Amino acid sequence: MTTLNPAQMDEIAARHPAVFHRSFWQRFRVAFIAGGFVLYALYCWWFFAIGHVLGTANWNIAGTYLADWVSYEVRPEVTIASDGAMKLTYPRFSPLGPNAEPDWVEIERGMMTRTTPAADAAGTTAKKPASMGFMGAGATLGGSAAAAEGLATATTREEEVVKRAKITLNASTSVEVVPERVTVQHAGETLVVNMGGTDMTVEGALPDWATQKTPGQKITLAFGFAGWGQIEPDDISIRRRFLGWANFLFDTNSPFHGKSTSEVISLITSGERIDPKQSNLSLAWDNILYNAEWQHLDVWTKLLQTIVMAFVGTLFAMLLAFPLAFLAARNITRNWISNQLTKRLFDFLRSVDMLIWALFFTRAFGPGPLAGMSAIFFTDTGTLGKLYSEALENIDDKQREGVKSVGAAPVAVQRYGVLPQVMPLFASQALYFWESNTRSATIIGAVGAGGIGLKLWEAMRTNSDWENVAYMVLLILIVVFVFDGISNALRSRLMGKPAH
Image (cartoon, helix red, strand yellow):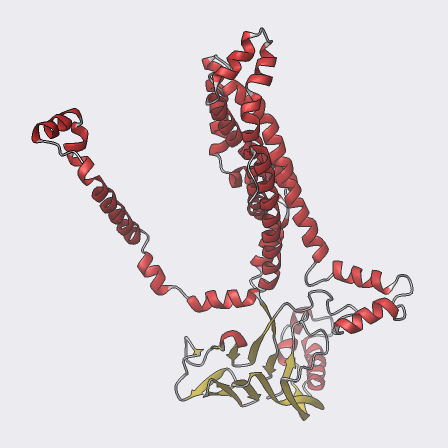
């Protein structure tokens, strides 16, 4: 090992001053960049009030929405009339179908004498003098009084009503309703609400899982994943949640609804025809496609529209961007005006977001896939044109000059000297945009451009069909995963690399 003397070290330092005598910025630039990043992060935290937003966020609602994606609700509702008569009902489109009687709802019925209020005869006859005839006021009022006397008689009848209803959500949660009281048990605690006509009183303090903004008004109950409920002076609504998607294959109107898998298979393979006009297999398939709750055929059709919309929009954009890129490339078309006009066209097309183009074309063509295809076409023409022209400007001119030196025509020079260098890259970029536009088409569909995006927005807007939202999101994810694999495989083959 050779040791350098001081003179040699000074000589080396003189030859390489940038190594031994670094500037102030070179010595502290890492610290400055790190400090700037920290300051910028603190500024963003303050400017967007991130701490306040996180502190006031309602994480319970977020958890409830996530639970709604993988579950469904059954919604029994108990109404209490002014005379104390109770009635238990389910929504029209309940997952249990008509005449639902689940075993977790206990009902005690009984007979009750109910009185029908008399008509307000005085209010009815007050306006009669305004239409008096030739008989005079006395005759008209006398007749009206006699009619009022007949209407004033109240009617009574015996009617079967609900005397008591108990709804059990799980082993630790239940809601018991009688006309004068609601008793809620959850997590070892009991809430008793006395029902008093238009007002309610709570015995003791409210537990943590019950909230009431104003005394005497609505009480909201939160039972976690088991469900939730609301208590109002004349209405008790309970939402019990079940894991899974109800009636995914057959809705409540299907003859196959409620049957086990083995029963359905038996009916399809060897059972007697349910509908004489078609086989049981055909009937089952029709019931699945036209399921009123999940609308499989409509969802699949809209998904296919989204796929076609992304493919056609990207294809047309690629076909138009290809020749325009040659006009924009300075080394291919040596005309400053042509270069600038084409590049500014690309800037204009891609500077307007695809969503804005979708809104514009929706107003022009009306809602539908044509608006979505046009939005994708316009945006991607600008983006692909810019990428293509930059790729052309970075080619190796030696190959082009070699083809030109043998006296080839200008078109042949581009065909054999330029395209072999850029075509794999062009195709790779077009495939990536096709894959990306499959996702983008979902977003622009929500503003009226058709496809599954519009269907997804309609389901989200109801704020109650989150399981349908999850179903469509899952279909979109599957399509994106499949297209991503296809795109990666094709790009790898075009670029001459093994697929991963």
